[in-house]
Image 1: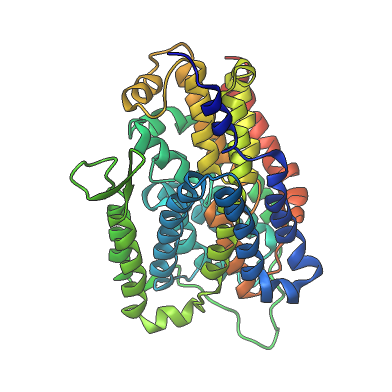
Image 2: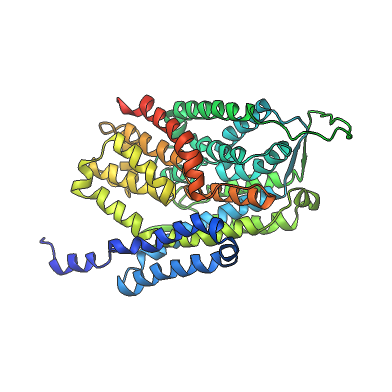
Length: 456
């Protein structure tokens, strides 16, 4: 059967031209400069700006490109994203953890290490929302922005590398067919190495930090060393959130779904998450809510800004995916280019869609189709030369590089917003990158590449 030239021409019209990435770039620039140069205007108008820029791209896709698939697909990704974040944020907001210990570098290391482990059980978002306030309270007399930055590096990102529950890109891979235990087997050593190295660097930072001098007229503070929890019943709500993750029609055929263009769209788990968000707040301990200075502003900020990000990044993701899957792009695919390509774009475009795009390209280069689950399983299990190495490079870099910017992973922006609500002055978008990501995180990621990928 010959190709239909008219069909090919029509298909091309459904693809976004290069200039359509301008709204995405503009949104990133405003996220970076707004809080720094026009703070009052930004905080008052960021919802309108995000929705306006999103509307420009969506309307262009629908009416100029006649492409409804892109916006609908972005909506399908956004709904579970914000539903899960809302449930975890609100449910954890009803849990107040108090650590009655003196803030020391060793105590902080212990908390960060615990966070890196439980990120794999309740996800990076769940661990971040549960531990960020206790972490700040523990360091109340010596809190600095670097405490929050290293928390984002370790707990909100790299910590969640060992299970599909840990981080969104790994869960998307699991839904496509990557075995559940795959990440534990193949990501364990890079996870342990990166966490250890970052904890060591943090310890050196924290050793130089001195407590705020105490008032000599006040009695010395004594510490019991106890950990107390207010609102512990909300752990049941968190447990329900995690269980609901598996109520997905791509995992179990009996779960109801909406069928769209051959894709099963979940709605059961999203409904459960939103119900948990509502019920966990209504039934939460008032004391825990008060202790946490709980506010809906952080989740509101994430919700609106990521509406803009998910919509405006459609052309960027499409252009990257088309090139990576093209003949010229596939020639460039090696485990090294997958590591750096996936990583760089995970920091700018959100790591979950970046993971899927690069996995699609890597499998296409090996003659396999990501939409066929048996192909994904074969690819993950080493059925093709270097396929395990390819997938490992994509999985590790998507999670690790998600910490490079505030928008690389959902919890990053939320942790920043909570810290600012508490009164901690956080670096700007570019300040975060220039002061911490490039001089601290990037060398760690480079060493990870040298040890685990470069010479294989």
